[in-house]
Length: 83
Image 1 (tube, helix red, strand yellow):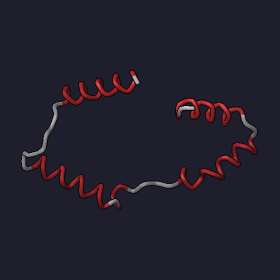
Image 2: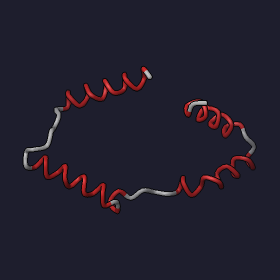
Image 3: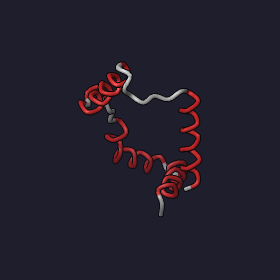
């Protein structure tokens, strides 16, 4: 069973399940739901941002115009939908 089907089945189940069962499911996944990811405490993430900023500022980074970005995004969406 693919992930999309599983998500649909879970969504339907949660929408129609008794309150007691919904609370039990929530208790199982509560820590993951409540967990937040602080990007600024991730040294790799911050280093990557700094690297990209430096490349942009010194002119060595590849940049795109707005229209190029939109075109790439639309291409990616079409590709994802065709899978």
